[in-house]
Image (cartoon, rainbow, N blue to C red):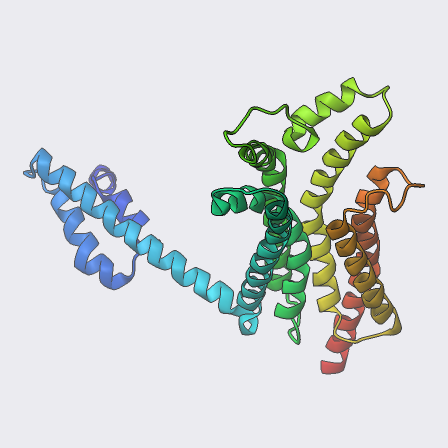
Length: 325
């Protein structure tokens, strides 16, 4: 008993157990076992042991990387490449929208000012386009990627995870990146650059919250600008999640009904109307509604439309299951 216990605690036993999780049997026999044998050899020098440990971790790292890459390929290829197609189309559409949404304000700026270098100015504008591009591009990528493919549990989990990642990235950009790049962009318009006081769009979300608390009893143009910036950035961070889950629910409906068709038409109208609203900058269009309500309205509408679609998708899957049975 004591001998077995002592043998179980030999140097390298735990390392081999770890290596079995990532390396193939052939790699274990040809590489890992000889390395561990050297480590367990009592006469090995300190230098030899250090080199042995380095070689071991290098081998395990390569095996883990190869295993992760293979797992990613298998994950993307699962369910007739539905997940891989969704990722590919979403990335392509979001990238195209980022370029479009960044080039439009850049073109307007170049008409009024001689900006140099133009490439740096373009990079300053890109963060502004990222949250909106993900909000508008992700649902399109999901609908195209999942077209004609049943939404399995794995697909649903992967798409929801993708939407959450996009939302988290949008929040980081809105909260911290956009204020700094906006400020750098404004100061770069002057030659030489000059220091400018930060406006609403150049404050972080925490700074906006503090400023809104100070202006709580104030109304007018100044307070409206801070309210608009605060809610626009929050709503843009939530939009990829809400709109992405809506697109997943719509793609999951295998049998088109009057309800799903009506929701699709209504969603297309809201999508186009809000895109026009964003591009035109029509913040005064709904003057009879508080500006915060206007900003959050698309998210609320898409969330409300998601529930009946999700129920319809479950019903259609149950009907398909009974028909198959």
